[in-house]
Image (cartoon, rainbow, N blue to C red; front, top):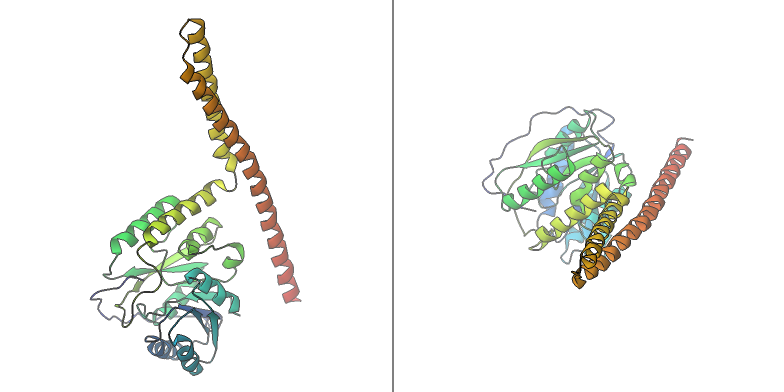
Amino acid sequence: MSEAVGVPDQQPPQVHIGPALRSNFSVVIPALNESQNIPELFSEIEATFREHELDGEVIFVDDGSTDDSLEIARREGTRLKQFKLERHRRNLGKTEALITGSRAAETDWILLFDADLQHSPSEIPRLLAEVEKGYDIVCGHKVGKYRKRLVSGLYNWLSRKAFRVPARDLNSIKIFRKTVLDEIHLRHDWHRFFVVLAHARGYRVGEIDVRLYPRRRGTPKYGGSGRVFVGLLDLLAVWFLLLFSRKPMLLFGFTGLVLLGMALLVGLAAIVMRVMGHGFRPLLTLVVLLGIMGVSLFGFGLVAELVATMRSELDDLRQSVRQLHDRQDED
């Protein structure tokens, strides 16, 4: 995560949380080699829960740490009423840690929180209070000076323009309905696009400002010098998925027909030139090239349509299974 510099300490305002939600949430904490921050993290979570009379789960996901994060988390977790410890044998990434924690949760709401204490646990009640306004997802918008602000701002700006998401910060702490993950398949590193994919499904997205503090100890773990390039490629992949995955013929079929049309026009031009005694062999090569590309793209579009149809049928089947499972739980 980015590091904040010189952010003044401010206490969040008082919030009101309904009785039902006070225990119906799970705080999922992905962590990689954060042993130095874990004791303070759990101490501040405990204090926040006690102050606001919260009784939610805390699920710590050790994402293949090579230090003693696992042992320290197990020890510190005893101070909480509801604590679960999940572990990856090797480092898989923040997306996989989010999924692991969500699967272990027994509540309707998931609150994704970072282990580096650049966000205060006092933001947890604010997210809970905001989600009660009817949102399915509430994102935290980082406030304060932090490094890589330009890169983060550009990335979020591109995401807003491409996907029309009503959130300024897609990669911060957030709370969401657990059922959202039932409809969304997150690939590696796609936690950045979780809000985008959920919004495309019709879920209501809200946002609040959250204070970003300097990292107290250790160094950032999730990220790296290549994350900007990878993030942009993932953004293009998600854009393509949302725009063309349901109707791939709009891209491949239309492009193929355009190329075939161009091949026909060039072919007619080549015939006219030949009749006039000005044969030009490169035109024939161009006709063949355009024709092959056009047929290939159109055929690829047909195959993609079949794949999209099967995917739609699979989504319907999953939805039917979930509804059946929900009815069985009610019975």
